[in-house]
Image 1 (tube, one colour):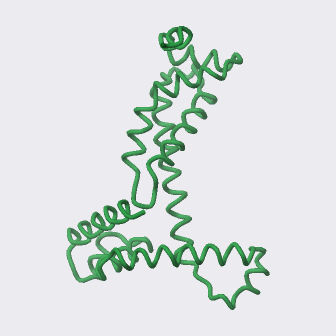
Image 2 (cartoon, rainbow, N blue to C red; image 1 turned 180 degrees about the vertical axis):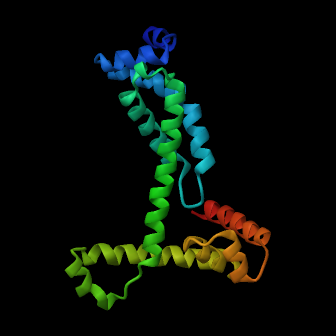
Image 3 (cartoon, rainbow, N blue to C red; image 1 turned 45 degrees about the vertical axis):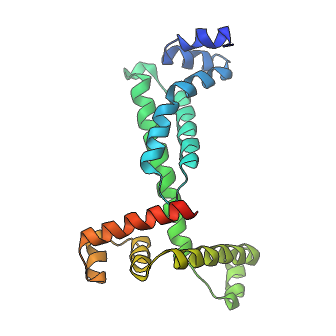
Length: 193
């Protein structure tokens, strides 16, 4: 049976819900979140990749909604729905960019085990680096078994930041073949990971 308080909250405008949240009723955010969850899921679905979990992006979008509710200024003459939509989109995009950049850096930053002294000079924990390297090695093994040679090379070029045209030139093929290979890679990795 629905809670009568929830039913009353559902009837309130976004702006009124935010006013109540700021007035000391943080539980009101649940109503706002239920209202915006379809939009958050839509953005998460748009930006989810083989390397980025849809549920992680839903969580990032929910955090962006909470930040939007906290920073919304009704005096600016913008509806909260418009403001929230932009904040959610940016939050999801930033999460994808942040994670993609970190993953690219980790894939490019292989160090031999005998470089542990150099790591200590940089202030990084040798244990953390070894664990990170082992995780990457396992991922590379999985990729090697899933992807064809052409797909592996396309994936390597993609991770290094090459454009489709640069990838096509390097692989001596068309941009359409590169796009098809990247679509297959996404599908294979999404199913395997």
